[in-house]
Image (cartoon, rainbow, N blue to C red; front, top):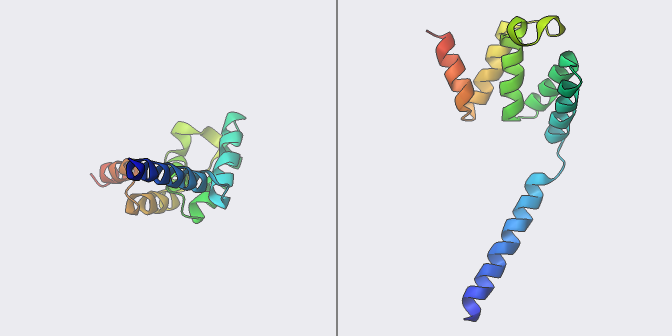
Length: 112
């Protein structure tokens, strides 16, 4: 009986250790938090700046979101975010290369 209990304890400790790593503050997560705060205050230009920084750090959610904001500027964010189709597509391609299904679908629709 000790073996299963030991394995369960090791498994639980491993889970908590790994979940602590994923919740640790990293530069990209800090940028994502700042972007969320900016969105809540309707500061789309500031949010985009933070998404761009997080995207540069490899954050797939930031790549997708910044790409969408740049691609669909007028429809989603109005005058606060000037559109940049080329950069938007580039960011969506980065996200798609990391397996982001939304980015893959958006790029496929653009290629129709």
